[in-house]
Amino acid sequence: MRALTVRPGEKDSLAVVDMPDPVPGDGEVLAEGLALGICGTDREIAAAEYGWAPPGAERLVLGHESLGRVRSAPEGSGFARGDLIVGVVRRPDPVPCPACAHGEFDMCRNGRYTERGIKEIHGYGSELWTVEAGYAVKLDPALERVGVLMEPATVLAKAWDQIERIGARAWFGPERALVTGAGPIGLLAAMMGVQRGLDVHVLDRVTEGAKPRLVRELGAEYRTGALRDACDGIKPDIIIEATGVGPLVFEAMANTAAAGVLCLTGVSPAGRHLSVDAGLINRDIVLENDVVFGSVNANLRHYRLAAEALARADQGWLEALITRRVPLDRAEEALRPAPDDVKVVLELRSG
Image (cartoon, rainbow, N blue to C red; front, side, top):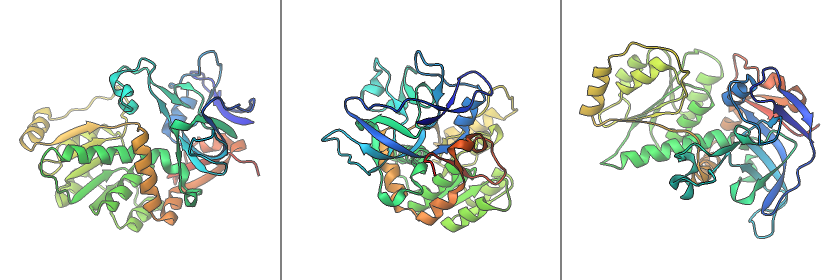
């Protein structure tokens, strides 16, 4: 089989290579790889910024945004040949920590978790792959063209789940939500906000093209300009920050409605210094009972919630999120971002 691989820590090592076909072990599903979503994490690993090969291996098979079709499955697993599936990314640490022991491996306390295509386990970027039946999630067959969006959707399924749990600390009746960033994470966040009946606004820099159109097709409002100006008009009860841009993060902290919830999903680069009025931000958060929290990764419950959200969504709208589909033999093109990209997908099947 062919697989998209890198030597972690070595620049310019990205290559599609031939590897032995995987043999499923006890309790494992064998799947034909259909598609692989490309995200910033893949680009950072390819740029040698981080990533870890499996112990004893020279190369790491990339890919954590999976979509596959079952070729064989263990008896009694709940999977059958032909089922459309995705594989969960993270595995609990071997100790395990208390969170991992309770199935909340997305909240691992000691950092000894492993991740497919990222940290010490081969990913899903190959023509064939195996996955433990307990870490595979079945999708509605109607999602074949868009099921590769499942993994990023889990990030937002978790974010919304936790927003609602935090809101339940007191009476919670949100009406308006602001999403900063109209990439795949921001757009899926907006979609799930609309599904909840909220008045959703999305803030981004571009003024034309796919992003504004996709937001408007959701029934949400697209905004450009300063975050403070956008918030003055709507005073959001919820902000989901999906850019990781430092100034936006701090502006968002000071611009929710009273008892507002700010969820940070974007990862900011380190080493950049900002001047902020920390006292004013602290005052606003304390006096308004605001909450600021970060969210990353997802556990099995969030995968199921994401599958439900995708099944309820307009399939044409979801397919429009995928702005480029690139064959495996041109994988390097997929990892080079283009100005009009929303989501880039690598097609793993030959022909």
